Length: 402
Image (tube, rainbow, N blue to C red; front, side):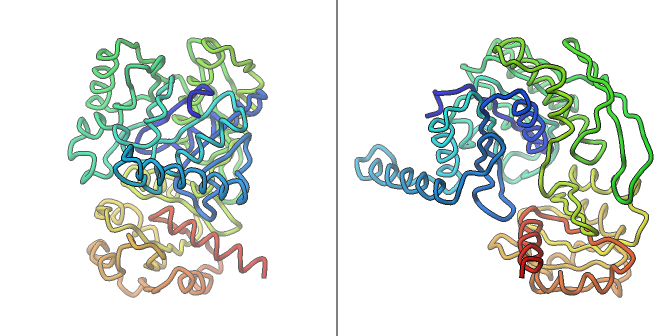
């Protein structure tokens, strides 16, 4: 099915999902039939497969899942597969097949983890894009930035026609350039000619206009649909990809489509406000730095922080960055087998942090019951894991609908 449309695969450490959201929004504004697969989902698994901005229906997802599973089982019986594919592999195939059935022109594929062995890489995308690379999943991807980058840059393969990348730290940049030389493709770097203009602010949400200047175009005074100054980097990479789609692949994308797409883009669970709740995954050091910068600059109210994380995370830096911002810190455990125990979370509390300000909650539901009592004049920040964010949003939605 993956041979029926053009594909863009996006890898990197942070910003993959946001770059996908910006690019999909631009293409949809241009009227292009567009498929998008991202991970993880927050509430429903159908979030992972979108066609023209809409989640696949539960009925269609179930039909595709049955088809893919039965096909895999037959291949195993015939000895053509060693084992039934993993959950993530099957969801990736569900997306690729759904896109083919919908006759999309473009599929945007967010890499799950790394790149070399990621299921999305099997689709052999014609266009590869890499967001900023930082330290994450070191136990799997490698201890050094160069090793991590090598895993992610491996999405650049013999059939890759275009490579685009956000500005990188020097070690990562050298690896990307080296990989491109091996494949004999010239990397295109997203613009750094970005100017931010500040306007009056509404509570919690700063109003910014951003101007981007590239070698191919000029896009002034755009109010990005995703919050945080770090989104300018993700937007610039999306612009670079969309320019390639326009100039090299014949997509009819005008300047208006760039503006409207960037302004209407949405990405759940990343600096996302629901009234006085702020949700942000911040599941690695780079993400925690972004959230800390946002809280420092824009949040003047007391912060009640609900925090939970997965066991494979080194929380030393994350905790040092985020915990001091909490007036009240609620440590909890998401309903996930990979979740870190609360006792282990406690071991990462920075020295000198007032233990009287720490509350433990065995479940996310309990944490959400406790938080409002401590945030009457402030905000509740739910962070540390996208699994935590998704579970919290699901509980709050069910409460509001009952």
